[in-house]
Image (tube, rainbow, N blue to C red; front, side, top):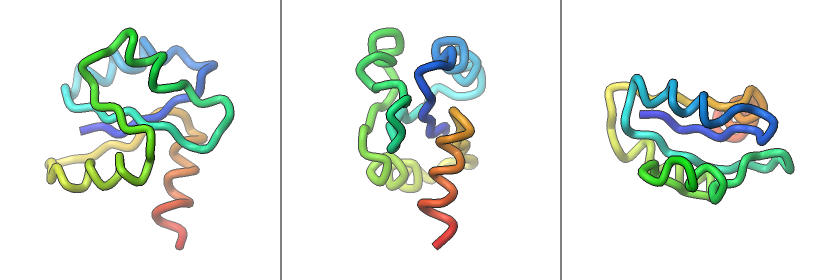
Length: 89
């Protein structure tokens, strides 16, 4: 399962297409960056993904699914934000 958020200056379509090669379970979220790609934009191209705007809700859902692996990815800014929010307390 993949949790992702990506900046709007990146090719999110190509990125998500690559991720769909390894899993069909992707949660798309947003984080506090004015350049983040909005869920509404991604949903137009990929309507079958899971969309949770609130990062805390998305993270809780990821953990509740109890998958063999979880991948947090997207932009490096998202990964840094995620790491600081959940692992640098």
